Length: 316
Ligand code: ASP
Image (cartoon, rainbow, N blue to C red; front, side, top):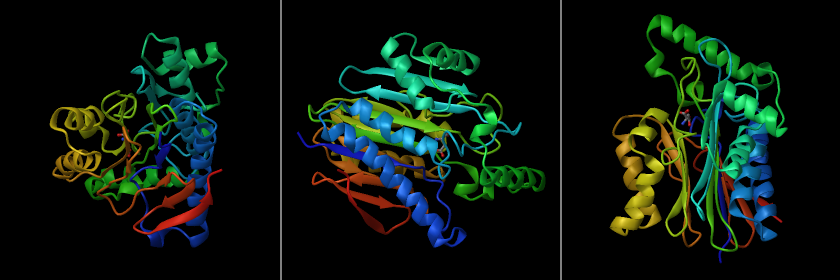
């Protein structure tokens, strides 16, 4: 079976001129580290679901991406985190939303998946579940960074002067996600996010919604999305792509492009990574850039933020 791993760090990528070359290089290095973590699992014959968790954890720990440390602020200047994971072999899934203290939300989502029932826990219940399972928790301020604080300040000003709709993608949002195919041909997907800057308290996006921002089903595909979550939920993006493949016989590329075209018609930023049943990978987006990366079957790491793709050495 062809091993496959692809990740995204969100379609809320800054214009190239707004970060120094060193900062871009640091972001790409964290993407490469995320791919190495996931590939280490896959190349040892480990399950796809463990690989996507490992990859997402690295991006949650990086301040470059809007998930875990570096998450967006809500209207109250706090962080509420959403994450989910799905095992395409069994359709088992776990998700948490509006969590405030879980250091790595994807790990809590996976622990919930392993418990089996319930599938989704919200707010204080999610945090309490992490406490109960011995999963690392942190004060809410752990997630804060200066860049996101500046994003919040500028969104508050935009709100007052009525220009919120004109905010750049990077000012607003971001997400991280991973999809994988393991040695047994099993697929998995995971997604984790801080949502969007200045989101209302209690707002939950698509990332923890199975079938919307995250979906995996063996024989069809695994998908992790980024972009305006309200639309990913309306179109059930992950499930829609899987259905276009299963019922209409579309290729992974055609199915993902068809759904992205529908999202684009609403003039929203959107992107995704997906892996097909045969281990093929796509990473389409409609924004200026999307943090993304993948490993080719020969183990070579590819990372990108905008149009140009960089090779970043062997994964293992
Ligand atoms: N999809 C995320 C959400 O709506 C945000 C993003 O990916 O930019 O919460």
